[in-house]
Every structure is written in structure tokens, then in C-alpha cells.
Figure 1: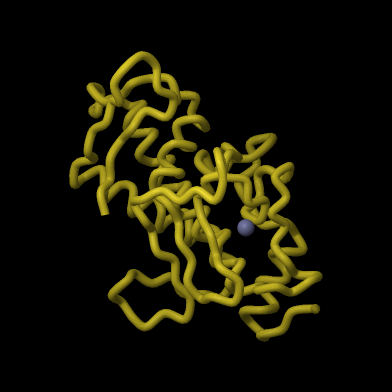
Figure 2: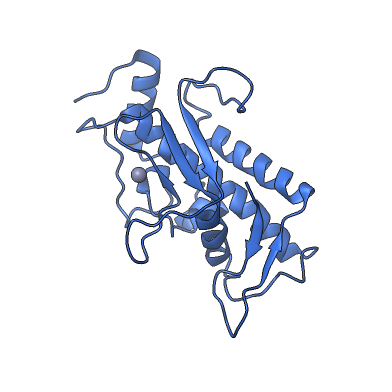
Length: 200
Ligand SMILES: [Zn+2]
């Protein structure tokens, strides 16, 4: 897939766009990996790279964009009863800029700046945190009492499902509390993965 930087909020004419270099791609990947591992650190799962082993659950990162309605382009999606989800790079890249308040700053000519590097990190973090959210959908399926919240007003939690929640990209929620699972969802995930049970 193509990794590129594109300013989230366009001003004037032209679309500033610049391709990420190899080092920045590695940074995005390792930030995504670290965020996903952090999300599941208290839950007994192994996070594997694509070629490492046959995984039971999967998340694919797509360079394209997917919109299911006008202005409704999710950063991740899990179809019901599937063990594979999709996370979209472009959505995370764009929302990372909003989270850092850099949506209106053209960084295409400043790829060596700290701001650009912050966007790189936040994009990777967003991909990893969105992947954690989608993987949780796979585990919890359509259980009633253990369903994911997907409540856009819930911020600072993996289960909120709000692509515009800045904490998905900064890793810090309200009161600078690290991004975490809501108590019920965390418990549900733990029980499901360890004992393969969910309360229906
Ligand atoms: Zn969701």
C-alpha cells in the first residue's frame, strides 16, 4: 500500500501531498504495533506479524478510503461474524492531524520537522488503536451484554468507536488518562479470550 502525507484541511488550491519515506513507514508500523500490544497487554493474546504464523484473528490495513455515506468514512470496520477486519490508513492519517491540531498546517515541505514526526507517530498509534477496537469486535461478536459500546460520546476508551476521538491518536484521554477499555468491555474480552465465554 502507499503511505503518504496529505493535509487534512485543505486551504486554497492544490492538494499538498508527499509520500512517506521508508524510515517513516517503519515508524508508523512500529507505533501501530506498540499501540495494539499495549491495548491487549492485560489480556492473554499474542500479537503476530503477517508472516509469523497462522493467526486466529486478523486486521488488514488498507491504503484506500471507505465511505458508507456522505461524510461518513470510518477508520475501521468489522463485518458481523468475521475474523478479519479492515483499518484505513487515510482516515487515521487525517484524524491524527486533527488530534494534534495540525489539520490546517501544510507539512509537505517540512518532513524533517517535529510536527511531521508527531503526525507519523499519531497515525501509527491511530492504526494500532483502531485495530484493537476492531479485534475486540471480532472477539465479542454480537453478544448483548458484552457488546462493544460504539458510543460516540465515550472518549478515552478503545470501545468508544469514535474515529474523531483525539485519544485514539495521542494515546491520552480526558484528564490525560491513558486510553483504556471500559471496565465491562475489558472484563468481557478477558473472559471471552481466556474461557471462551461471554454473558449473552
Ligand atoms: Zn466499533
